[in-house]
Length: 268
DNA sequence: TGTGCCCTGGTA
DNA sequence: TACCAGGGCACA
Image (cartoon, rainbow, N blue to C red; front, side):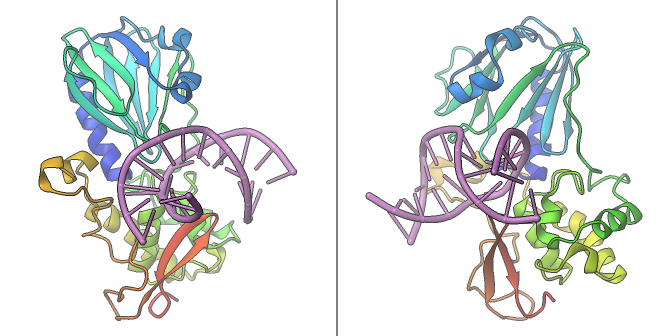
C-alpha cells in the first residue's frame, strides 16, 4: 500500500541491497509483469553491476553499469522481500532479482499491478513528474501557477503527478483537511492564503505518514493483519467518525473514481 | 475530463 | 457472494 514515504523507505532498502552488486538473473512470474518486462528487455539487466538506486515520485530507478535503467512502480500493493536464493520464494512473488552474492530480491504484490520495466542504454524512463514535495524544488509560486490553470476540483488536481510528484489519494485528502479546504473547490478558485496553507500542509502530512512497510506493520505473529495503519490519519477512511478538529461526522464522496473523505464543517 | 480497466485478496 | 481498494494509463 505504498505512498511516498513508504516508497522512499523501499528505495533505501533496495539501494542497500543492490549497490555495487551484479544482477545475476531477472525472472518474472505473472503474465501482467511479463507484458511489461519481456525476457528480451530483462536481458539488458542480466549480468550488470548496479551503480545506484534512486527514487522519482513513486518510481524506483536502478542504474546499471551498461547504462540501462530498471524502473519499478509498486502501484497499489507492491513491496520488496529480501532473502537468499536458496529460500522458499515468498507468496505473491511477481518479479525476482538474483544477485551475485546470493541475495534474492523479490517484488511481492498480491494484485499483480506493479510494473517493472528495463530501459536500454540511451533510453530514459519518461519523466512527466512535477516537483518533489519534500525538496526545495517544491515552491509556492510554482504551485500557485499550476493551480491557477485548473478549473476542476482541487482534490483530483492534487493527484496529478505533474502538479506534485508522488502525492496519493490518502495524503491529498489529509493535506486538504490540514489546510481546511473543501476538496470540491475549483483549484483556480482558492485564495492566495488557502493555496499557501495547502502548500504548507503537503509536507506536514507526508512527514507524519508512517514509512514502515506493510509487512512490518502487520506481522503475522501479531494477530490478525490490519488492512491499514490509520493511526496517523485525520480523515482518510474515517467516514462517519468525528472530525478530530470540530467533531462533525466525516463525509465520504467519490471524485474522479476515487474516495474522498472530508469534514463538511471545517473544510470550506 | 471522466470512465473503465488492469488484477486478486480481504472484508462485509 | 458481491464489493472494495491508496495508481496510472488509454480512450471516448
